[in-house]
Length: 324
Image 1: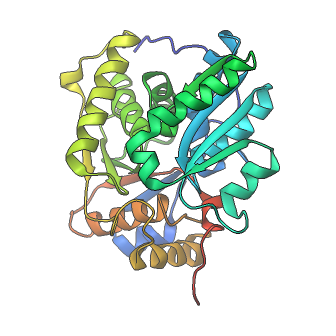
Image 2 (image 1 turned 180 degrees about the horizontal axis):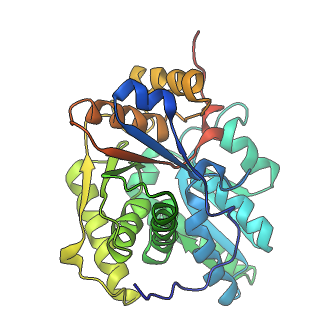
C-alpha cells in the first residue's frame, strides 16, 4: 500500500529483530516468535521511542524549546522522552504520578541523570486536575520565553501512532523474508498508541494476523473507546488509505490484577520463566502481564503461529523489590 509516513527523527535502532522462542514454543506446542522492541536503544529502549521519533520531529519543526509529558513515577515513556529530548537538544519536563520516593531508582534515576525537570504530583491530582497542572507548567516556561509542546501519556496521539504503523511495515517485511505469517499478534496495551498503530498498520500492509492487546490496567470500555477514536482520528488526520470499518483489534482483559502498576504473582512468575528459559527480561507493569496473557490465552486456542511484541520496560524493573 502506498502511504507516505510523516517526517521523523531517527532515534531508534530499527528494524528490531524477530526471534523464535524455542522453549516457549515447545511449552505451548506452537510456534511463538518475539519482536524485540526492547532493543530499540539503551536509555531510549522500548516501544515509546518509535512514537517519539515522529513527535519530536514535529517539535523540532515547530522550534519548540521544552517538551512536557506525563506518566507514572516509573514511566518508561517519560524516561524515553527525557533522553530523546536531550539527544535532539530539547529540554524535558516530566509530570509524574505517585509519591516522591526517598531515593531515585529505575526510570526515575535515569530521569534525574539526564537532568530532566521533574514535578511529582499525587494520584488524586493526576486524575482530577492534570490539565490544570500541565497548564501551570506551560505558563511557567512561557513566562521565561520558552516555546512548549505537551505530549500526552505514552505519546498516544495520531502522530505517535505512526511509530507502530512503521513497526507493522517491519513485520510485513519480516514475513516476506522469513515466510512466517503469524495468526495472532500480541502486545501489552497500556496507553493505546501501540494498539492503534498496529491496528492500522496491519490493515495497511495486508498482514492477516489478528492484533490482540493484553490490557495492563485501564477500565475496559473506556480504553477500547479511546483506541477506537485514536484509530479513527489517525486515519482521518493523515489520510491513511484504509477504512476504519476494515480494522480489527481485540483488547483482552483479565491479566492486570488490581490495576495499572499492580505487580501480580503471575507477572513475577512470568518474568522468572522467560529469564531462565529464553534469556529475555520482562518488566512487571507491561511486558510480563502481556506475556502471561499470551500464555493463558494460547493454552485455550488450538494451533496457530504467534508473534509477541516485546515493548520493553526493563528499567522499571529496577524500581521494584522482588522477594526471593
